[in-house]
Image 1 (cartoon, rainbow, N blue to C red):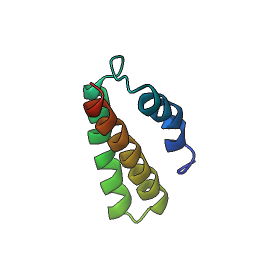
Image 2 (image 1 turned 90 degrees about the vertical axis):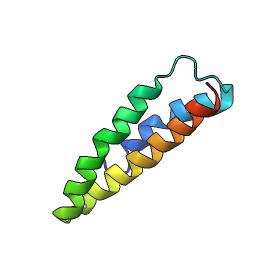
Image 3 (image 1 turned 30 degrees about the vertical axis):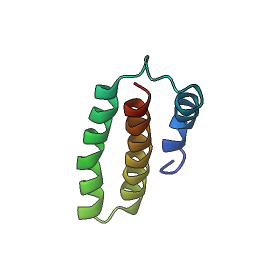
Image 4 (image 1 turned 135 degrees about the horizontal axis):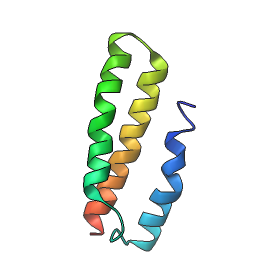
Length: 74
């Protein structure tokens, strides 16, 4: 699940970059998702839970791709 869950955002990323329309997407929501991942990433690093680290690193990558797309196509 650590790898599969971030892949759930791929359809949204594909739609964003193919239509180049970010009008219906909330930048604040994606930034807050990003901020919300950081404590869980830190927890995974501190307690050496590689599943949490992988999950949250992948989510941060997905969220960064979305944030960049929203900023580009706003």
